Length: 116
Image 1 (cartoon, rainbow, N blue to C red):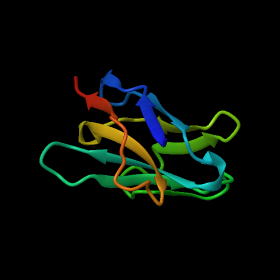
Image 2 (image 1 turned 45 degrees about the vertical axis):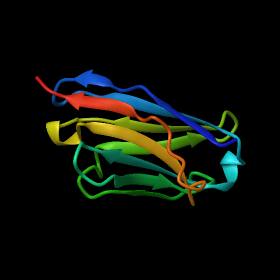
Image 3 (image 1 turned 60 degrees about the vertical axis):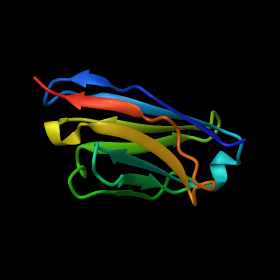
């Protein structure tokens, strides 16, 4: 079955960097647009970035453009999010998913906390 496992989160100071990974299985990873989302308690999950199946096309939420980079390894079915110059407003649980999602499935996400 479809499985998405996010990792790489943690506590980081403002201005710091983290690299998130998303291990995908149970579907043809290389055939799908892949996306990163984030959610803070009490708010809707919001889109952060996406990447085309071949990795050539990428899009970013305005507030992270220039600081975040999305990439993928289709050989190993893994999606990445490199996050630089992190700010407190980036604190959230980060999720990956394919587009379109498989039913209402979401992984557990990985928590990012940006604080001094």
